[in-house]
Image (tube, rainbow, N blue to C red; front, side):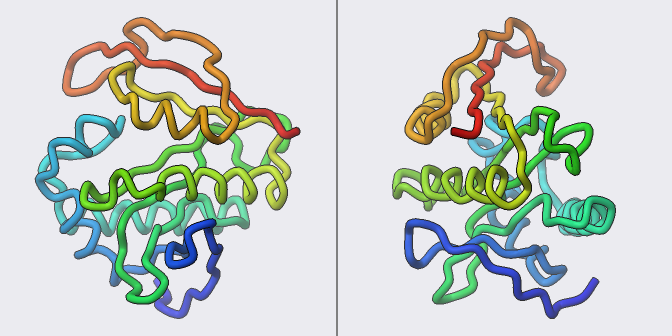
Amino acid sequence: MSESKNIEYTTSISNIVLTEFQDSDGPAIVELLGNDTEIHKNVRYLPQPYTLQNALEFIHLYDDLKKKYNRIINFAIKEKSSGKLIGSCGFGGSDLSSTSTEIEIGYWIGQKYWGKGIGTSIIQTLLHIGFDEYKYSKINAIVFEWNIASQKILIKNGFQKEKFLKNYLEKDGKLINAIKFIRTKT
């Protein structure tokens, strides 16, 4: 994988940018996710503990998807001034090249960056990329019922609660309730 990636999206927080992941981000991903039970609790698929091998597989998966769909699917969230990784966000779905299918967004942010408006800002930026650049017509997010902070971030960004999903997701061998939020291009 090349280390010369330079695509960068600015967010409404001047020091926060979305960029492509690089292999060199692997240790920073592990530092943020390694044994963090709070992030693990709120992310659908996340090995615990999270290893460097997991991080590199994650980076390479999304590099392969970029090649398949000719667009960045997952972004590193970084501090612009320091280049420090603080999280990840991106798109998911069965056909990420289609403009008519419903696309899902997801994200995680390191705990020490919670409560600073970063989640709201990155969702705004993902919506811009998804609607204006990738031409998606409908974007959804599915969050665990207990994740009130993410629900608030989505509502701030114009998402509407579409439905309650009882026993919808499996997490750590248990069926978990979730809420589906939806946003269409306006």
